[in-house]
Structures are given as C-alpha cells and as structure tokens.
Amino acid sequence: MTTKSQDRRKVRLSRALGVALTPKAARYLEKRPYAPGQHGRTKRRTDSDYAVRLREKQRLREQYGIREKQLRIVFNEARRTQGLTGENLVELLEMRLDALVLRAGFARTTAQARQLVVHRHIMVDGQLVDRPSFRVKPGQLIHVKPKSEGTEPFQVAAAGGHAEVLPPVPGYLEVELDKLQARLVRRPKRAEVPVTAEVQLVVEYYAAR
Figure 1 (cartoon, helix red, strand yellow):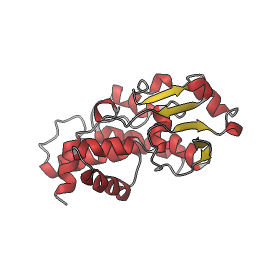
Figure 2 (figure 1 turned 180 degrees about the vertical axis):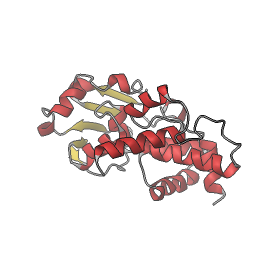
Figure 3 (figure 1 turned 90 degrees about the horizontal axis):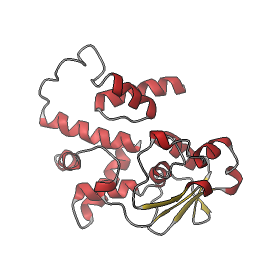
Figure 4 (figure 1 turned 180 degrees about the horizontal axis):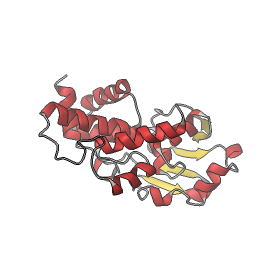
C-alpha cells in the first residue's frame, strides 16, 4: 500500500471514528467534522449499543495502531490487574515503547514511531529494542541509538519539529528532546493519557463477547 493510499485510509478512518489518527487527518477533521460518505453530513440514526461500543473499541485500537488480537491480550491483563479495567487498559497500552516514542516527540505519528522501533533506531537502557509492543517499566530510559542521532528524521525531532502536531508531553515522561532521550518516571494515569476513548464502553464491548 502506498503512503498516499495509507494517508487516505487514515483520513477516512479518522472521520468515521471522529478522532484524528494523523496530523493530516486532524486538518481534514477541522474542515469536515462529519463522517465520510454521502450520508456523512446527515444526523446519524441512533446506533445500537453494540455499534456504539464497537466504535469506541475501534477508536482505542486505531489510536495505538494495534491489531485486535493485541488489544484483547492487553484487555485480559487489565481485567486481571487490581483497579478499574478500562483505566488499566489505557495505562498498559500507554507503556508500549512505540506509544512513548510518539509522546516523547521522537516521531510525528503512531505509524512512524512503530517504524523507528522496528528499524532498530530505539534503545531502552542501552539495549536495542525492535518490538513496538515492548512494555517500558517506570525508571527506564528510552533513547535514540547514537548512530541514528545524526539522521534527518531525528534532527527534526531534536529541534522540536513535531511539537505543533503532538499534545504536550505528559507528566509521566521526562523528556530531553535535544538529547533524544525520555524517561518513564512512573506508570501513566488514565486522566493524563492523550487518547480519546470512552474506556467503559470498550470494557462493555469485551465483557459481552
């Protein structure tokens, strides 16, 4: 799939889910804040409870750019963990390496963050990690491989080139952007995570399956 068709798919999906998945989609949503297709502007008919829960689950999944199987695995872990399942779910997803690479400002989109990890540009505590789903523990340092620091994408990132399209750095991350490093200082709290999703509806979706 070409980058252009991927972009189009993300814009269409963003409009359908009502949440910007890329900076380009954010610009489209400002101009066209309605769903795609000929009936996009008309008021949606009242969706069934199932459709509402499904859409919320899709919103969460697409914001992290993960497969259904991956989301279900984390959901099952969240359910076994003490506390509210929905909040646990987001907090565990947010500790993924690719999510934190994005939050730190090393990448512009979730897809780019995943690519940086897969292509072995990212280290955790001095060790190369090429699994986007790697769970970062509080206290661990995420940093760009020294050999990669001088490349253009990272020079753009180090200069704060993605700041205008990303939310402010959340409180659970300490970032030294000029050094291309970030430390997860503690476990994220759901309220701080810049993700749009009614997590209780996601829990209800899985509970009914």
